[in-house]
Amino acid sequence: MSLSAKGLAAVSKPAALSSFLPDFCRPRAVFLLMLNTELLALVLAFAPGQPLADFWVNLTITSFVTQWIALVSAAGLCYLSPRLARLPPPLIALTVYGLTQITTLIITLITVWPVVGRAMDRFGVAEYAIYLGRNLAISSIVTLLALRYFYVQHQWQQNVQAEARARLRALQARIHPHFLFNTLNTIAGLIPVQPDCAEQAVLDLADLLRSALAHRESITLYEELELTRRYLAIERLRLGDRLRVDWRLDPDLPLDLPIPALLLQPLVENAIRHGIQHLPEGGTLTIQIEKRAAALRITVVNPQPDDSGEHPGAGQRIAQDNIRQRLQLAYRTPVPLAITEASDRYQVSFILPLTAPD
Image (cartoon, rainbow, N blue to C red; front, side, top):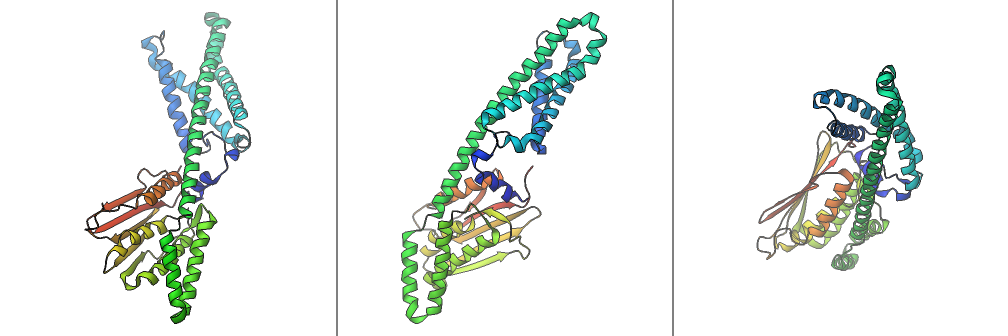
């Protein structure tokens, strides 16, 4: 499954059908669980009352027991994940709590009893029961804290996703009145002299309006390119030879790659509205898509007036912030957009990974 499909599935999945737990079937989640478990073992080995001379022995035993508890619990949660996804949060928490307690009990009995059983005269049943109760209490506290953390993080993630969906719908519904007015005037002027061009302009405008009303969160790379081409065809009717487009597309692009909707077209629209149309002689808009080993690099470059009276890129921030947040949500990219500004040139680039993250 591609990264885009998996990342966007998380955005579009209804909250009622998703568990607030991490996916313990994924190596990354298991690795983080083992890492945090080892930190817990380190803390327990430093507990007061433990002889410092026996620190490494205590750490080894504690790590062995806690890691087995964590791994068996993760395997159980991985197996139960399809069922847990259909349960409400309270039942999920109760199931996880019960699973970790049973796992702690069994692992403690299996790993410690061979040692304690042979030395029961020295340890006694009471001491062994205290040790077992201590492990269960620690497991209970750690499990409850982890469940609380997972639930709060899940709620925060749901809020971020809801905001991203709202931003996408706002971007889809954003049809500038001036653009629509100018397009209709252009079509009206073409009808008597170039009816074929007028008809094609109407079809292009219809596709743009259809995309605005569709509210789709994911489309293919091919659909995004076609939407951008139709938008450029309409703008070329208005700007004429002032608008020149330099397409630089690698020949083996994965056109069926699912990507978040409206990534390229808003950047192209900004490049024209805030750059090329302010230049009396127009300019060349460069759209480049490079295929790398595990990603696509998309770059949009436009000239802009150096005496426009505004900071380079001013007026483009709303669409850029929208795209930046949706890219970060879908791909977890630390720096989703790379912007290069100059007095007469403006460049925006971003990366679309081709493979799913662990």
